[in-house]
Image (cartoon, rainbow, N blue to C red; front, top):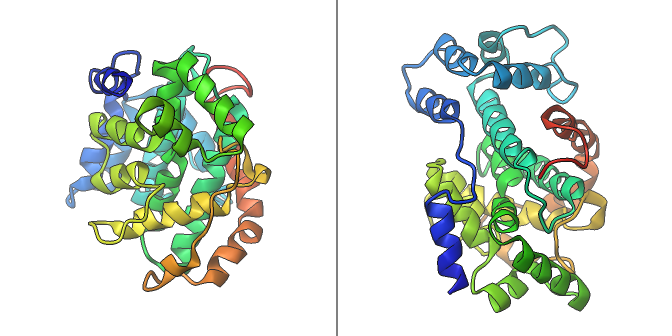
Length: 291
């Protein structure tokens, strides 16, 4: 069965790149309440290429710091643990797929623009509502479509046909995935997050961003990404793969701390941050090349 084959490939990291060791070290440091900025900075500095990218982003307009950040320790001290952790995960995972050499069934640059839009929208929604930490929302939004990257790497021909069918028939991509592959990109993203030992809340947000999480640990993060993905589903914010917009059922807002006005305001509110955040793509690699 194709679903079993895909899961086996993911769990064995067959055709799927593994995360750099520095990511595991950084997550260990962040999870240790006794860690200092120096500990965090030293963990990052063990990977010079990653450090260079982190510093370039830390000094970009997106973070708005007017001085000059010259070391990883300075970045942690000035931006904080949460933002630098967000940067490490963002740069490391984008870098894996950007330079993987695979030619996927996805429009490369527009796919990443959608992921960035979801990240910025999720962070803005988290700041407005306080239902989850904003920087966790950013990372979860950025990685919500991780499963699409994996499917385009592991079964590129089959997935290309699924994407074409969803667009031709004007249907939501997850429905066509389930029908044709007996799995969805959200399921596959959850498998990859589990294999990479990403934080549980992040794993859950990736795995369940197409379903309503009524009651679960860290449900706020999953809900935030659930709504952010729908808010930025138009072509204005890159390519989502859906042949029709995802519906927003406002009845689900009851008891979440999210108001319909919050969702209406997000597209206008994130316009400037979205353009700045797209600088991430220029840091990782040249447009239109790689994954």
